[in-house]
Length: 117
Image 1: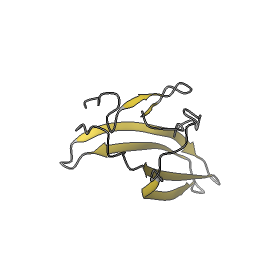
Image 2: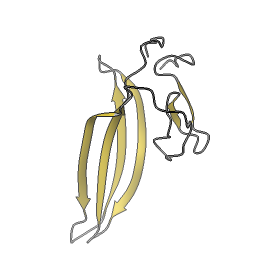
Image 3: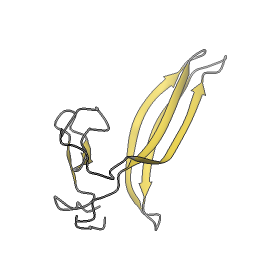
């Protein structure tokens, strides 16, 4: 995986609050929700949600089970770009866990350089 140069579409940086890798253009960290920039959002930069999946797990009456949430991103050729364990845990009888996976997208400004990953 290559890193786009600063100022390019898809360029990344670390969140100063939680240290997770985020888009350089982000105004709010998607992980910790800390504010990064307070400038007005650019016109036409409405957030899109092209993918959202919701589901839940319920513990059985008989036994507990463990789970691992894995997020994998692949390119158009099927090549794995990144793999991340988002969470692990256990569900016990009578318990429930809900999961939501969301992909948020913001149109890139037309004047920024394009860099392929």
